[in-house]
Length: 169
Image 1 (tube, one colour):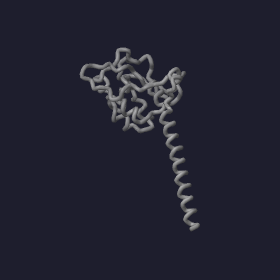
Image 2 (tube, helix red, strand yellow):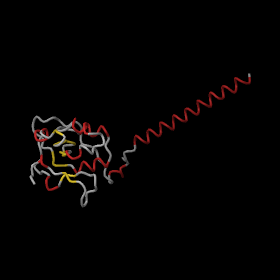
Image 3 (spheres, one colour):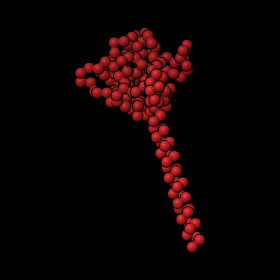
Image 4 (cartoon, rainbow, N blue to C red):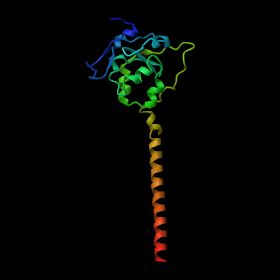
């Protein structure tokens, strides 16, 4: 087997690897890092690298398994796919699969494009004690629904009381 980044072997099921979860053989990962020039050479269906949060992933064997279809991956092949990846709102399972496809870090060079999205904020269990649980939008939305329902109820009562007074006259 070759140690060239373009010839990574992606493995399927095996010890510690559930079926359907494509992974890059750990022995084949590069420790030197890859430049944008290196990554840009891997932009075809059979040889597809992506950059997400300054990590390089070999998605070659995952193209046919991707739930969004191959075209989505081919559109960002050989380039920074961070923004596209984050805009979709991938699940934890998708991020787990992505981890298995990592081949190395992006080695930035002068003149490389700037990162499209800043690094994803992750919260660890120790962070949740500070009160930031990531449910702020949910609680705010809940409050808006409750206030809206209360306003609707009060408006209905007002209209209903107006109709009762008008029918007695």
